[in-house]
Structure formats: C-alpha cells, structure tokens
Image (cartoon, rainbow, N blue to C red):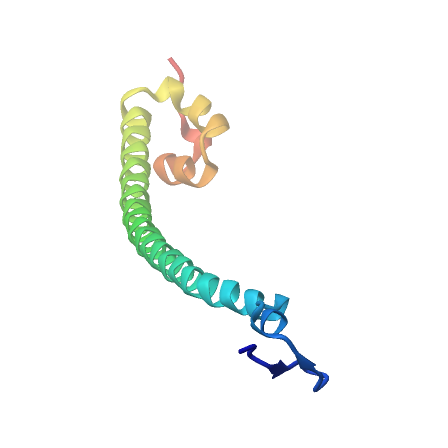
Length: 121
C-alpha cells in the first residue's frame, strides 16, 4: 500500500515525495542544533567578560593606591628639598645667588628673606 499525503499546494503526492525532508525542515534542525551551541558560546563569553572586568577593577584599585603613595612620596621629597635648600643657604652663603636664580623663587625668597643681603666669599 502506498502512503499518500499532500504538499503545500494541496496536491496529492506519493510517499517518497511527502516524506522527503524539505530545505525548511533541514534548516530548522540545523538552527535548533546551533542555537544550543550558540547559547553555550555566549554564556562562556559572558563569564570571560565578567572575570576580565573583575581583574580590571582590582588593577584600577591597585593603581589608585600606588598613585596615592607616589603623591605622598613627592610631597616628602619636596619638603626635603626645601629643608636642604634652607640649610645650604645658611651654611654656604656664596651659593645663595645661584639658588635664587635656578630654584623656584618663592622657596629661595622665604629662605633668604632678602637676596640683597647675601654675603659672598
């Protein structure tokens, strides 16, 4: 006995034609197969991105902490430079003019009060 079914147009066709997979059914099978794979890939990608973002956040915190430490060190070095400059002004008056020309003016002016009173020799 021959199985009979109809196609989309409503025409009666033989079993071979009726049961043969159409391009659409093949496409659907492939789409369903790849949908699961695609979802796994997307999930894995999202995990990687999340991990990356955590690492970046941690690095940013470390960099911020380092920046604070460097700023603190810079302030200490500046303070030390001022102390050394004042000491040199008091112990080596012959160098005071050189300092006033080459160092930041306000620091030197405060250290000597009046550059015209500098003694040479």
